[in-house]
Image (cartoon, rainbow, N blue to C red; front, side, top):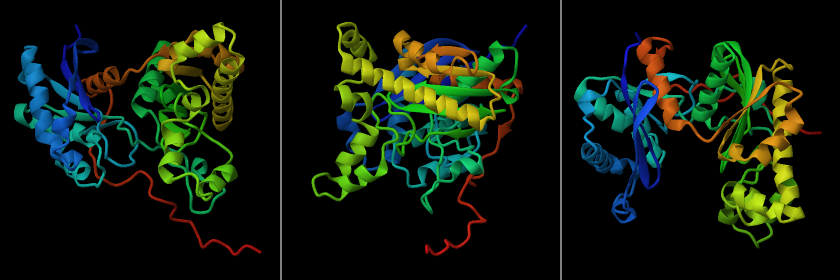
Length: 375
């Protein structure tokens, strides 16, 4: 009979903290602990919210008769760890010191220290699973044609890897033994090539590369944007917002709601149909490109994220890529499930738990020479 473990997972956001409790992989409790913006406003820095959030989480758990002493392991979304390989890290003082003092001012940095406080109080382990700054890119995938500008990995790592692991298990293989292309299509959109357990190529959802998304611009021709930046009519905030918040479907159609777009298409809106088709087309092109990056050795294509619940979108993507490999859909986001599954693998000894050193997985090219003069 399998051992049964109780695992607490959490993910801090800007104004709330998601908390869940699992018995092995079965969720038994879930809450989105909301934090009053007026109370958060008293803190200048995200790290100053630590004690406040710990108290709020404990209050919510106590109200639901959940005793932290009964938890076997704690697992969370831990921002601010810098670029590392993917996998499971033990949360310790080194992790907490790094994220709290690394200069990154977002509540995601509180994941590790919140969990560490619980673990220290009850003598149980705490884990960071496929932390959000995971960077496993192959060197060849980093090079761009703009000297000194290199690609980094900002991707939906936790959900990407969880879905790739699920697909590998479903076909009777291990994650380290398959090549899978995963497209996460939510508000942001990331497509990644998973090559025997590592995400060796992907677009960058923060810096504005890849297919356009429900509210992000994705790749666009550079020169028109450069001209906009210097024409005096557009400021930095406006341009950055189009790249990361108001571009994509939102900018082209005025909404990033796939259900609303479906209704427009069904009502005969040809422009909505074309734009939605274009997003699926670009996702298909990205998948095809990563199939080339994997030398055509693709065991499966996975579609995930909220928009992957939309059958019209899924059908359009399948039309472009089903010839490459079988397509599997895991619609939605499995962040908390992924955190629990990672902790369970660690507790059972199925995956190695790494010690965090703070040393980045990539910090530039040591062999980069002087830029030659242009003739």
